[in-house]
Length: 426
Image 1 (spheres, rainbow, N blue to C red):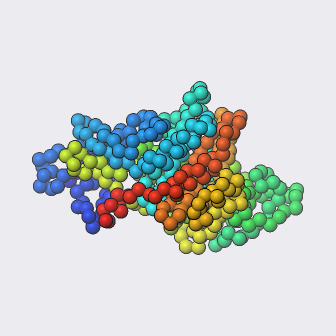
Image 2 (image 1 turned 120 degrees about the horizontal axis):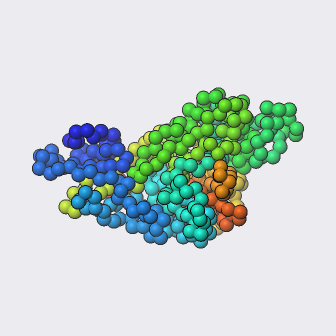
Image 3 (image 1 turned 180 degrees about the horizontal axis):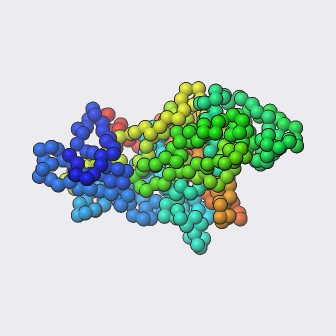
């Protein structure tokens, strides 16, 4: 029951409680379709999901979780997946510390529901940094991924090469540099030390991951794993979202740069980063992200609804457990240790499962320094995936890891709102 010329792409349904009368067309549109006997009498109305949201929606102090919107003379009530408390807390922190620009995304790993999405731009910065993405930095896929790509590299050697978190390689020189003599392309200058994968990941040791790109992974293996993590793949979301890009290396040294994130050609959006970071607490799966939960017409008819959909499962079994161990080490004794230390004093936090990855690199234009944290938090009641990117000027006002720790704390201290799936199970 779809009008001629329109292509059916996705069909979400709860078979135990739903009829199959609401097809969904593309990520940017949905259609009202009545029952078979009524369809002839009631014409179909198309809604653009992206057009439901005002341009400044994700930079407002308190964007409505539920609101009315009118398109093509038809009014609908929009029910989003946002949680006001998390949304407001994230915006408050970004405004308090006022980097040049920033973006934060919090998702529910099991479903892909977006719980918070805040885009921040310092109004005193003229012209705006990263002007190409200023409308919504959360969906801007031009941020250099930096060391976040180490999640993909670690996943590749864990899944394809049988590595464990304790696997060691010799590393010479400083951890945060990447010289040819450190990765075997020139005569070594320093005596190497044995470093485990867990330590290399948690402290973001570039030479270790550079060696993985040259000596361990084949030329195509890292590229294939990156695609399993949805790099260079079309990104489907309710709002326009560009694909994240993976660097194409042309030499051994560039393969090392790719594997450790020591380049600005591998890029990612904050939304995609949150999806990747949530893999360890969702059984290795990446879910299709969504913001619009359902649409209800004035008549009370539900004209659009969601169902969780798995996009890919890049990791499973032992490799998944090891990746979780690597990301946990980052917040326990790695690069995010200081930022997460205060959470140990939070009541009940001993039972929380926390992990993540940091990354820092200058923007290609040198107009600022890009600082990342992407990770997850879990307690007995809920799981969250988070990514937070800040663009700093000459002075760094706050670390992205600290802001992420504060948001994870806010999310885990509050009971999760019932999802649509749970409501219909009940």
